[in-house]
Image (tube, rainbow, N blue to C red; front, top):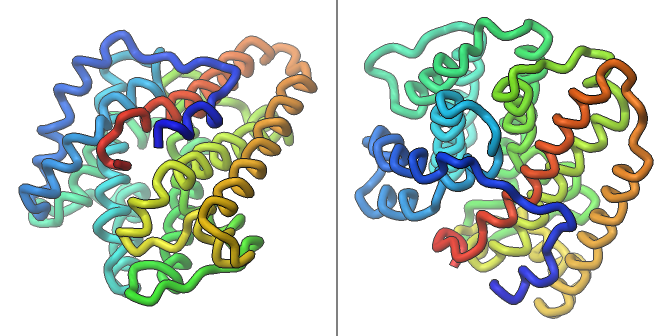
Amino acid sequence: MQSLFTELQYPFPSRIHPNHALIEKEIPALIDAYTFLSPDARRQFKAADFGRLTALWYPDCPFKMLIPAARLLVWVFIFDDVYARLPLPQLKAAQDRLTGILRGHSPAQEEESVFQQFAIAHHELAFHSQAAAWKARYLKSWQYFFEGQQLEKQYSYKQELTYPRLAEYMDLREKLGAAYPYIDLVEVVSGCILPAEVFQHPAVQQRRFFVSRLTTWDNDLLSFEKEKRSLEAMNLVAVIQHEYRVSLEEAYRIALRMRQEQVADYRQLCTEWPDFGAWKAVVADYVLQLDRMISGHLEWYRDNPRYA
């Protein structure tokens, strides 16, 4: 995997929160809250450096906001690793419950820790006191991810994997990446919610898209072996290999070329960035944070045992 890093670097550097060591110390307790996990599963999650990922994604946010962000990052990895494998009716029921929590329905004391931790994170983020427009699009971002998990069931988590066509993969992988809720959190942790006319600008939407596209494709390139062992079909390299009937080496070459084209398109967008007038400085800070999410996400993979 290390050899791939020479080809996957970005022209904008990552940055890590100065309190990254402190947030990493919080992670074991956050994982231990999931009492349904086996001791071995907890050990593996604790080794995955989720505190470091949080500190790389939100390097400038107040420390008190870093804790719920870490809680929510731990949550999505556990939810995706465990609940995505459940039969579709159970997965849908869990997703409906999570949507209800975002709509203001608190989990009962006896409910599973997945629901408890999701609710605690949003309480710590003061979710229900955020702007209504932001909450609406944040909810939509989670529903987008949930839809992807449901659609993935037709391909993954079975002994005989099937694969989508590459064109279908493109759409489905966007949903499965779960990037958008965490991109939405950039506004909350920075303390500045973008107005609708800025958020909906095509350039801003395209910038958000590239964060999702590049982080998910980097994941696919760096986690092919892990996802193969986990019976996951939604991997760019695997889909290319299946569709074009090529060797694994050639599938990697094609995937890397596709990614390089996306990076070039992203840099072109940055070069042609519009002037947002009175919001220029705010937007400039916002997109800087998006750059750091992309490069920080890649940096997190370095020497990470989760993807060994």
